[in-house]
Amino acid sequence: MSQDSLPKQVKIVEVGPRDGLQNEKSFVANEVKIELINRLTTAGFANIEAAAFVSPKWVPQMAGSHEVMAGIDRRPGTIYSVLVPNMQGYDRSREAGVDEVVVFSAASEAFAQKNINCSIDESIARFEPIAKAAKADGIRLRGSISCALGCPYQGEVTPSEVVSVAQKMRDLGCDEIDIADTIGVATPGRVKAVFEALQVVLPVERFAGHFHDTYGQSLANIYAALQMGVSIFHSSIAGLGGCPYAKGATGNVATEDVIYLLRGLGIETGVNFEEVARIGAFITHAIDRPNHSRAGKAFLASEGKA
Image (tube, rainbow, N blue to C red; front, side, top):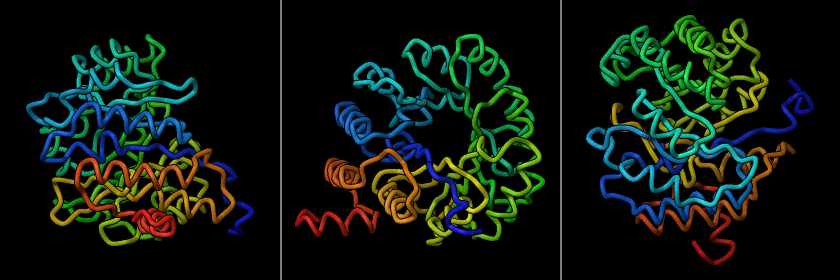
């Protein structure tokens, strides 16, 4: 496929405030989370995964989600998303005035049992009342499929297993479905095979690529997905985050690196790379974590700020 046939525009879903921070051991102050989201909003992101309305017993870092959603400065046209596991979480998200709720399952039965303590079918059934309520309330519904390209317990995940879960997500009424390489083991060939198989379920424009960089393949995988027509990608500022269920799994692909790649391909994102690099410096300094973005660190060094 020639570069001319790649998507002309890509939506980046910035997941740093939720997926990037949720596994931090020390609680990140709500004021820092609010400042991060506000800076990301100003940088031009069309979709920001801002919080999760989950039990603080299981995810202590998301305990302040209601305060965060109440404190951010919202930009018209920006989608502010939150993760919800049940109707209690959904009701709280609706009170917070979110634009999109995210439900989640897995392409691997083994991961579903370990992660959400139920089968894939049971997880989908749990989300049926959320999906019905979201549609009635005019709130976007997004489905996320974990371990779609490999599982720490099961090992290989077949494209047909991913298709099966995507069909269930479609039938729930999901507006968008994330195909997640949760433990970062995918390679471009597998990415192409999965997205090719998924096109029997929905148009490729309805799917998003969510890649982790454990084996250093995330940018190559994004390029492979672009070649398949995918035009939505998830990334995390400064490469923050990781998967607690997979030993050695590193964070999401760094947003700065994705924007740098897309800019080099002449693909519009609506996001300011230089500003995002500076945001990466802000949040990593604020939480005392290393910056995993190569493009971001290179730019900051050129400014004398690395």
